[in-house]
Length: 134
Image (tube, rainbow, N blue to C red; front, top):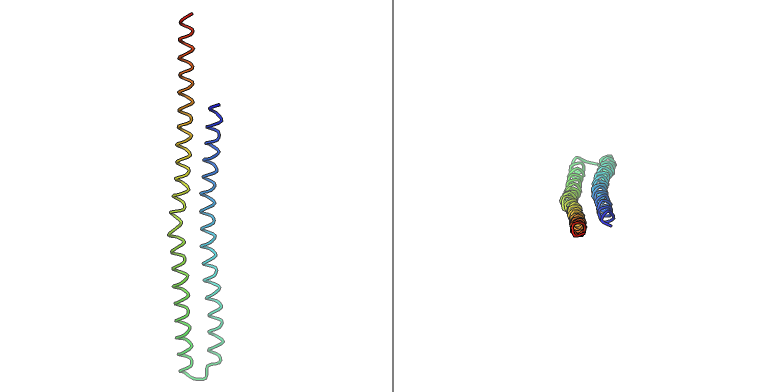
């Protein structure tokens, strides 16, 4: 009877550990996706810059095109960096929540094991009393 409780606790700990691993994996995939988007945006913006520069008619056009490009590149970079910061800021909280669940399940398993040991001790004491009476 007590073995079932500890077996369930062990399974719960494994499930929680796997959930923690899954949480970390998902966060890393989101981060990798954001970095890939940054790279793709940078490539596309650079290609557009080259096309615009080819069609420039004067030095003023070139300066205006480059200024526009720098402004857009900075805005995109700031936006993506902020998003990455938010993702990385929530990642420790999610991991802590997962491992708090693991700790709670471990504590529950230990309490169940303690109860089982207590019951076994009481049964042994009762058997000893019954044996000594006869």
